[in-house]
Length: 131
Image: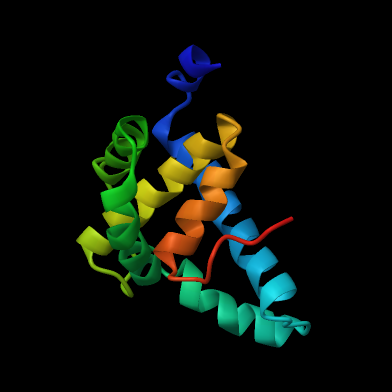
């Protein structure tokens, strides 16, 4: 699978990674924070999915990345960005995209426990949950 993974475009990894991060956020908010209304869930999710929040999370994640994870993160971070939202700096948006690529890579390589670990490190959540 690793050889095929290298053939997946950066844009496709970021697209998938965005979904993976969104799933982590939604799972955390529903199962651990106990939120149940769409208004509360949508409002709370913004603290996780804004480019600035993902950039901050990535600053905490980056020191614990493996060599392979770092390669995918930098691949996403260094991608040219032409549509940066007004709510984020170029640097924040680049780090957020790198995080999405990283999580897309981890998902395609079947590393679900690592996704959970890095999500928790990034957002400073309590210890890894037990199934």
